[in-house]
Amino acid sequence: MATTKIKKGDSVKVIAGKDKGKEGKVISVSNGKVLVEGVNTITKHSKASQANPKGGIIHQEAPIDASNVMYVQKGKTTRIGFTTVDGKNGQKKVRVAKATGDIID
Image (cartoon, rainbow, N blue to C red; front, side):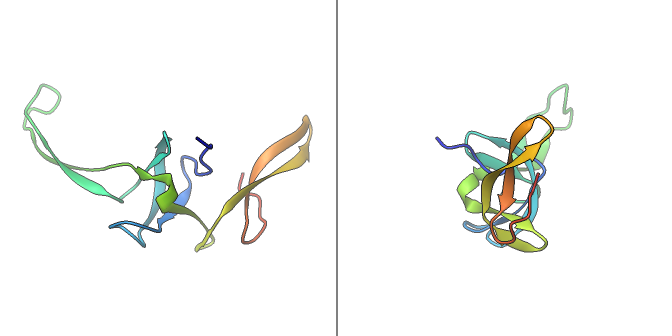
């Protein structure tokens, strides 16, 4: 499996699925899935326990496939590429927004 180009903290927009068009920040990335703030919320019924004495209904985000989100830069979606830049300690691989050519990180 190829590495995902989306990282924790990125702003993304959902491009497919029931939440198409929604934007949010990436909370976590694992196994080709991303957890996006406020997107793909599910309702979970929890039993009363010591940690949660009342129990009840909890609303939380569920992971969605990384292929269903797109990076957002300056309000527009863009694809992400990689390039190398010269630094103090030799060359460094960095992410680049393909639409503008700007270095992301």
